Image 1 (spheres, rainbow, N blue to C red):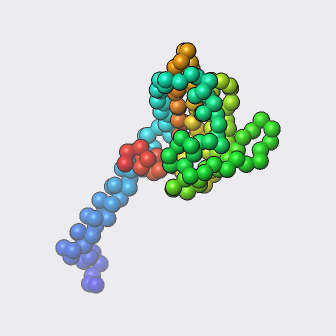
Image 2 (cartoon, rainbow, N blue to C red; image 1 turned 60 degrees about the vertical axis):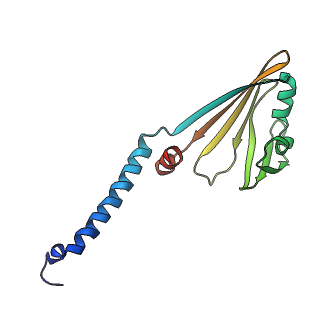
Image 3 (cartoon, one colour; image 1 turned 90 degrees about the vertical axis):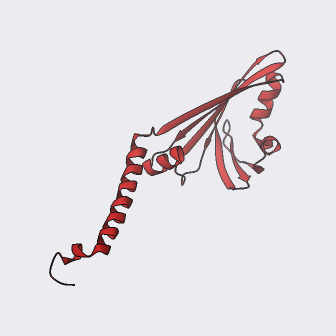
Length: 158
């Protein structure tokens, strides 16, 4: 190295500075994008089923049989819980996750939430079952809270 300031006269250094600036700009853009993306995200989907509401309710509420109709699940282990509470662990092809009941207003509302504390988001799902004779309308609503702005940007935009 020569005199002070000579480092900027080397043409290769401009490329290095350009690349470093571009990486910094991308990181800042992702961070700002995550900060302006809503922290809590909600989505709901409904469907009409050709089955009585009480039969649909029984299927939705039977946590121990989730693996019978959720193809990604391998097993559900019901845990010992205090009266009025329900906790379980689901094992799937991608790992295991712990849940608990958050709402149980038979025969219309059933809610569950994740008990995982080391994840980037807290999740809650609510089923709403309504019937009209031989048909039922089921609405599944999800509420996802993602506190980390980088995780929020990645999960929403990529």
